[in-house]
Length: 104
Image (tube, rainbow, N blue to C red; front, side):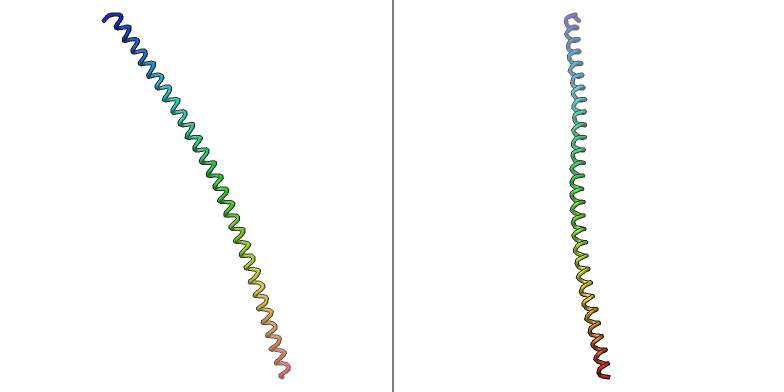
């Protein structure tokens, strides 16, 4: 082969090696960028999940408090009704005793 042809082949090989190396470097950079993006998305999703979880926890606590308050109110109402029933029963019992005492 002539020196000129050998020189041209070597230049083409050098250019091909350079292109391959640049492509490898670019692929590494893209891979690193993709990993960074994935990590960023993961962190964002975790933060959004935590925020939503806190909102749900707050809603649950509010519902529990509301439910407890409703049960407490219902309990107080039932206590009053029971007390009224007991008072009425006592009144009826006293009336009955007094009536029977007077009838005797």
